[in-house]
Image (cartoon, rainbow, N blue to C red; front, side):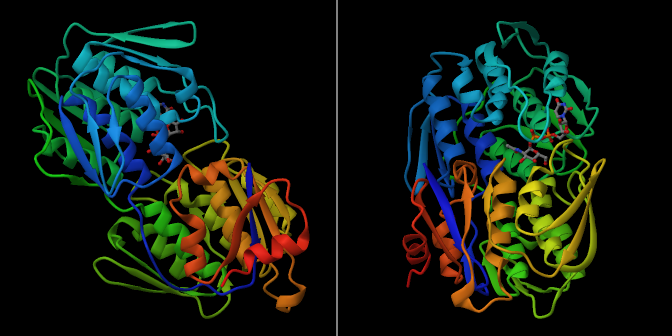
Length: 441
Ligand code: UD1
């Protein structure tokens, strides 16, 4: 296993291109199951979660070929079971329920257990699919779904769940008749999925609003052109926050500023200057970071997937920031690790009170989940900035596999901005070797 070694205190300057969005690519890859034939997708990021999804499709009998344009052949579905070893690695596997039931009439998915950021139930997925004519049994840790034909229905979600909206939408496109999903999630990734489904022949209106209307069609077929996955707005946000933490000047290209408006507003209130074009965002952090208040909410509110990175930024602020997490119940796992770097963070219920001191110090820290890892990595990039370079320590981020799930080419991208970091074997502990690894040209 590897760890990430980081020497902080280097201002990030330059430009980096956003990769394709993990959270759009996952449901879109799974949606290919709905239309028999060969699908072509562009801008699919090279990530562990994408490999897991391709193995899952492979287990169902659908081979894929990775390249600049990824190909998936869903001509034949040979099996209808998502096994524990894949679901436990990647909760989004549960999204096969809708497509498998719609196309195959049966689906078995190992129950996704809790995860580091909370229990994450799937009751809303099942409620919606039941309304469309599916029945479910739970046995031996599996959810076994069956249907003898999907029929359109009106579904009122209890909360705007992203995965739930996607699962129900993927089933509704092949149901007989019309469906309405109310209180639907409005995330841009839902719009990307709907746009992809439309290229397969689906009738969908209202994606991106809280009411999605679907008119079912008897069959779907692969589009004649490759579908291009949207940019990853959480990756975009992570590079921008890293720019702010290091008082840098960072431009992210190949992105859509409209998809990160709530983040840009928060970065401005933290003292950054933001300049946008239609496809790029530049962040300049000239002065000290200012404290801020933040509440996570469903889109278009502030995304929970950027909460831990903003918590890292708050540690570098002068003053007290408050961060309230409204989406997941246990998403402050990074706080304890950040305190190892000198942060003072009190958790009161769903709120983190971050007493920034303007500085953090290098430390060995442990990742608990994907976004917490990113937050710790960028915190380490700002650590020891108040020291002369020769006296700065090294931070080590253990359990690197979390980051590999969601950040394509992270080390090279951050290096291109001037960060000093390297992947090294876990058991390498010689300070001279570690330092040399981070001092690449
Ligand atoms: C997706 C994203 C994840 C992001 C999250 C919220 C993917 C692959 N993952 O996760 O990165 O953090 O949206 O923006 O796209 N809930 C229920 N019952 C359900 C479904 C959800 O109670 O049936 C609750 C969850 O426990 C959570 C909230 O609803 O508290 C939101 O979860 P949801 O939007 O479903 O998140 P995911 O789709 O799992």
